[in-house]
Image (cartoon, rainbow, N blue to C red; front, side, top):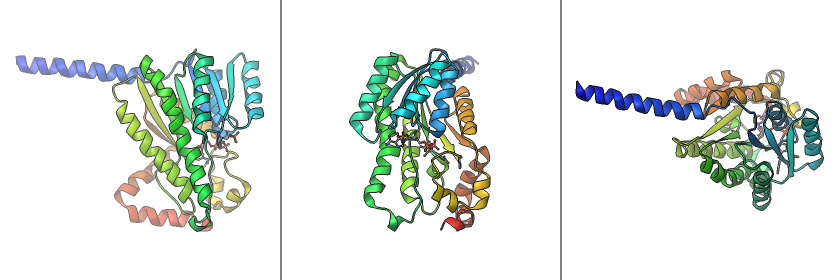
Length: 288
Ligand SMILES: NC(=O)c1ccc[n+]([C@@H]2O[C@H](COP(=O)([O-])OP(=O)(O)OC[C@H]3O[C@@H](n4cnc5c(N)ncnc54)[C@H](OP(=O)(O)O)[C@@H]3O)[C@@H](O)[C@H]2O)c1
């Protein structure tokens, strides 16, 4: 009986501890929060930055196009928000480190890192120039690694922080003509999953977001023309991904797929890989 009580006691204490960690990782109050968003000049990142500022966060805006970032910062300031513009090519390690340290200097800290910048590309593997294969990996994957490496120490010092990785469904399920792009997102998936486990028990939460096809400038006209009609017609707006990201942060989730129904594909892939393969080939037929 005494043993059972002791066990119950320990279990209760453990549950309380797990609960309190989980709660500290739920992000619901953005007032005074500091955030750095990469890829803030366009699409999902731009909307994410606007929404964060609207909710009371002080934001650092990172991308290459300074004019676009300045215009966004003006829009944020016009709504009484605070924004810092940090133009940077994230594939350049020195530039990324400098932007991260400037953000800490100007905002005092970075509580939330949104690793969002990235680009796509769709062509057969043999048509890819190897320089381009290396470059897309430097932007989509190494760019996120540089920012995580630079900003994690000050999060750990405060035992508080959130790191969001904007991956892609292509980081879980590959499709034809996406060798270079899918590889960057699979790399991100592995990195984020390992980092999340490593940070278990700390106050830092890693959230990986897996968007499906989203209507942003990410898709150039050639990509849009190549899209099967069904995919083009079912494209979602960036608002949905941003909303799903905020919702996942509020619940302390570690991953979210948007639209959620796509996540069924991961289960099918694990249980019946050949069936999923045939489905992917069928839906991407026009692109091949
Ligand atoms: N749209 C989709 O269907 C979709 C689906 C799944 C995942 N995603 C992911 O979502 C993220 C955002 O994409 P989006 O749809 O919002 O595309 P987007 O509108 O084209 O925005 C991409 C952003 O990345 C920035 N960027 C690109 N290369 C950069 C570099 N070398 N250095 C710094 N910034 C760079 C761009 O800014 P500058 O050009 O000013 O540098 C831009 O702000 C990407 O990681 C993408 O892979 C998108």
